[in-house]
Length: 405
Image 1 (cartoon, rainbow, N blue to C red):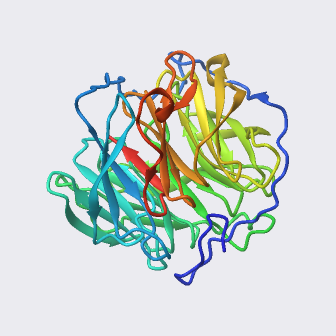
Image 2 (tube, rainbow, N blue to C red; image 1 turned 60 degrees about the horizontal axis):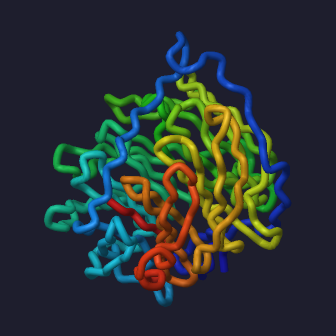
């Protein structure tokens, strides 16, 4: 059984090293890049969408990822809606025909949904949302894809294969459909970290500058930066950032200012503040600090950052909490404020609603999705049911991803 709490039924291993280490200080900063935003040589900050006001009378779509090949799992992508005022979730069925859709991403134009097919013969699938038609699947060229994202330009799909430690690029055509893979890179160096048998790419995302893409590899304790050729869809490695041995980096999230990012280290139960230079693509990983866990076995999963860059939230599996951080010094420092129980078991993924007023946690082992109200200007989290009669956490089989629109 792996740390995500499911048996290996596809012929590849997602077993994680389980020796968690205590975090360090609760406040750690990293040196600022050489040039502040707006000065020559400074990386350009990606434009963030403006927060949209919640509409109490108009439910919003919610898509849910699961595993279809495990006992108690789902049968495809879960379809639901949520009330942006109360947080209440209402289920509306399942989109079948996608195997093990454990991670979901939306095209920037909002018309196409993408899912990984997390199996030995890994693939990515596109779904047109207007009529929920599957537009087709393409092989990633690797095993066990666990993450995907769309380049902000909307022309390239990026995916990370955990089982094979590889990352892939696929073109996206005008209809939203996925084309044949344009590049595949397998991480062969450095050698695996303590307790790891090989590379394990866990995330593949675009940097704030748009020209660089970063791959977070848990197995090699490394974040790789590549320059993406946006004409041909090919990758050229430009730098590597190493964590301390055995950290097991899992997920990276950028501050909206573009000069800093926050890294969740799954294996040693820590987080790090990172500096980022968008001109070169170079990431500088700061000292590890506390995940906020209570000291038992815990695996940090994913960071999200509020659109104003004031607060960060971290999902912790085992501790079963969301840690709250105040972001200070323009993004260079995280200050731990405390933790909030998720009212579920093993929160593997979390997501903010587009207006930033709700936070969703996908709780894998309890098969539930919890919803929190996010306090404006305070970053406080309160379960939706504590403010309004929104009911208990929403039941969803082996909930591993929640994507609110």
